[in-house]
Image (cartoon, rainbow over all chains, first blue to last red; front, side, top):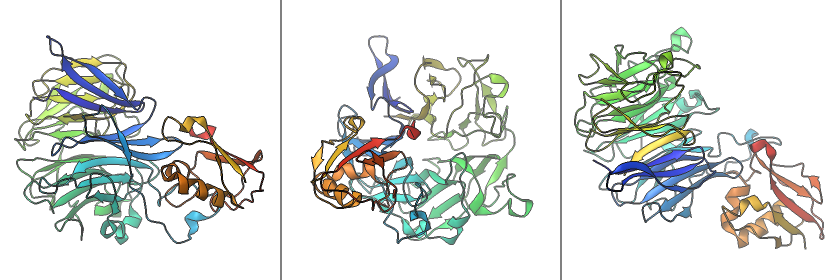
Length: 369
Length: 89
C-alpha cells in the first residue's frame, strides 16, 4: 500500500505520510500556504509532481517538482490562444471563456508517452503537454465542436473538464468528462471526438433535452485500469456505469443513502467494486442526515453497503468534492478529504476509517504517491 | 521615463521590482516591463492580454479606464501602481 499522499486545498498543498515507529499518518509538509491549489498530480511514470494554483488575483499557475514536493519550479500554465478582437474583449469585459480560470484535472497520458500530460480546465478547454508541462497546446478538435456552444457551467460560471481517463491498452483512446457537457471519447489521440453519454439523463433540463449527450453533468468519471471498458460516473442525477467503453450507460438506482454526490473511485483490479460519497441534492450538498458515509458496491451496482465506521455521525456537514476520494494501487487503501478540512484514510477498503486531520483547509483533491 | 511599482503581494510568487521604462500608454509601459521580466506578465494580464479581473492599475493616482486595451495615456514622469483589487478577496 502507498504510504504518502498529496492533499490539495483552498489554502495550500499538504504532504501526508506515515512516519515514526508507529507508522501513523500525519501531515509532513506544507507548500503554497495561502494559495488555492486546485489540482495536484504525482506522475507515477517518472515521479514528477505537478501542482496547479488558481490564485485569486493573479490567475492560474503551474508548478512542478522533481524531488517529491521538496522544491518547486514554475512552468508555463495552459492558456488560450489569442483571439481576434471580439465581444469578449470589449471594455468592461472580465475573464471569460477565452482565458483559463482553473486547472481542474491533470493526468498522465499513456505509459508509452513519457512526459505527456492532459489538463482539463474551466472554461472547458482540454490541453496537452508533451514536455512535462513546459508548454501546452489547446485541443482544438474538441474546443471547436459545435456542441460545445451548448455546454454550460455547473457550480461554476463556465463549463469545465474534470476527468480524463486514458485507456491502458491504447493511449490514443481517451475519455473525458465535462460539467456540463457530457462524456467525450477520442480513439486517435485527440484528433477527433465522439460524445458518448447514451443512457444518461438530466432532470435539470427541459423534458425534450434531458437525454441530449452534450448537456449531461457527469460530476466525475473514472475508469477501471484492469477492465478499461468499465467506467463509473457520479452524475448530477445519479450514478451511471458502462461496460462497453461508454457506448451505453446504465443508471444505478441502488446507491444508499442517496444517488447524489460528486466523487467516485473504482477498484483498480475489480471493475464491480466502486465507492461513492452520497449527499443531499441539489444545491443543499450536505451529508444525508448530517452523517458522513461511504457507499460501496462489490457487485457492479446491484447492491450497496453503507460504510460509516470511523466517520462522524452527528452534525457533520462535510462535502467531498470530485477529486476528494481516491483508492490506491492495491485497491485496499482509500483517502477521502472534505470541504470542512477533514481527512480520512481507510486501509481495509472502506470498512473503517481513521481521522487524520479535522483542521485542514477545504480539500479539493487527494492523491496517493 | 515612467516608473512602475508593483504590489508587494506579488513578491512571494514572482520577482516584481520597481521598473523605469519608456512608453506612452499603460500597455506600452507594461510590455516594456514584461520584455525584461516575461514571467510577470501572466500575473497581471489574462490569456487575451486584458488586465486580470482582480488587478487594478493607477496612473498618478487615477484608476485607469481601459482595462481591455490598456490605452490610457502615460506621461514621461508618471508613476504607475499595479495593485491587487480588494474584489479578489
